Image (cartoon, rainbow, N blue to C red; front, side, top):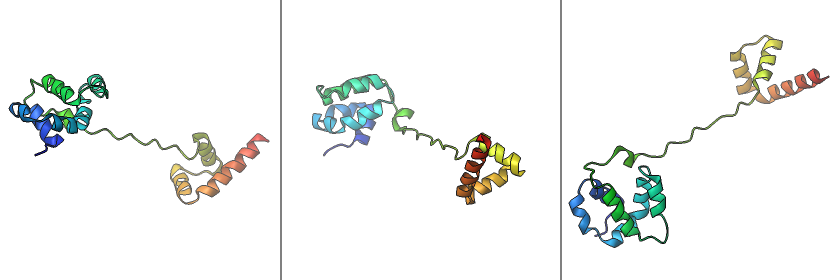
Length: 135
């Protein structure tokens, strides 16, 4: 019966006595995902083992030896990559907004409203104001 990476991970960390029954074929099939997970602990070793010329089952044996003292699954094992925060570029420059607020005696709430409902008109107005400032 083939073994999946979750079961193999449990064997590597908790049920170490069952590791001797894992076939080389099962080790090779699950190597990629386990090596990627072990990279959270030691990226340099994971990159080294990822070499196409190395034996995958032997590499997993080395990982098993590295985690020989563990008795439970570490917290980092099930960690997922943190999502990159999306930086939102402001639609208008601060000095443009400040100029509008001063010229038309409006507040930030009014600016937010204009940006939300009248963005194109606001862009045109700012463009016209810039032309007048240059002259």
